[in-house]
Image (cartoon, rainbow, N blue to C red; front, side):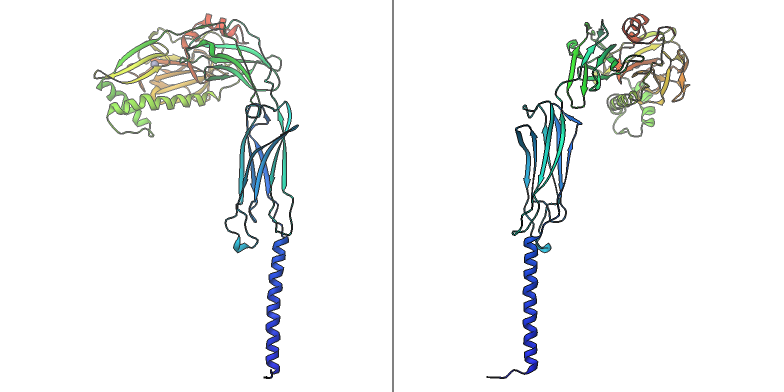
Length: 465
Ligand SMILES: [Zn+2]
């Protein structure tokens, strides 16, 4: 039996103390892990409409960047109905940082709610309830985090009453309609096929009385598909038919022979003015790109400009046709373009071509504000006037422009001189009229009787210039 020296005993006690401390630390960590609560997850519920009607999109976003998410759930509750719209669960992270693995810090649940998906929904209120489990150790359970959002459920469409009468319209034409909407309406106007013309408050009338200057697209052959509409913020929509007579447009077509001389004349100036245009291929290839792609791009630009229209009548009196002009091409004429006997393109001509002497003065068809003045692709040098409430006139192929953007012009004032810039064979004026960004037949607007019967009889606009 050996005797331990006092220094050996001291060393032994030291070792026991260290081991004991380690055990205590481990126990402490274990207890801490078993009792520890993770941070509370944050929950945000968003609905894409202020109120729920037929259909709305809901997104619940859950975040817990500390220890990660466990399980999440989104429910819809109304009266005795509770349904789970979506739920997800994630692999749990360990208690200690090094064992955490891939914790899920953020997750979202998306769902569609509304009468279309939950036919038991009734007018009133419903609750969206989002639940997220809280991370906790085996010795302690924490209540989940619950966030609720109340949403209004509205199923009745806004009130919609027709006030004007005698609506005779033509395919490719325009018109005016007056109606009254209930106070829940946030959007109203005229739908013609897939094309919508929005309404404006009727000047000088009671609240809720509105009107629309509307376009009947030249592509719309079915006159039964034209309606006034009113929509609320829940997407509930009322529609009513109002057209008394619809006249289809007889098909018109023309063939345009594209010669090398024409290509050499029109293509290089347009390419030079259009840096974004692909200059590859022959003159004919470039011409076809200009006639199709550039044409579509320019029309989209005009539609965007139409949205900046002034909400008032800037015009009065009949629209003027340029003096001593002969009509060279009709509205909505389908043109086949042929090159050396084969058809290379087909487009629809959406204006009126008027020819007089070369470089003749071009008058403003009516009073308005200059929305655009300058180079406009296929139209060459062009001027666009805003006459208010979405009514625009465009003057194309000008040799000279004599007004500037933002300027007010009087009815008959010279906006420029005729020419052959852009896609034009010879000197002429291309006059185009847009209603809410859609080309309509200018012949109607150049006819004082038509304006009196269809526009001025319904709206507070005067036929005295
Ligand atoms: Zn033209």
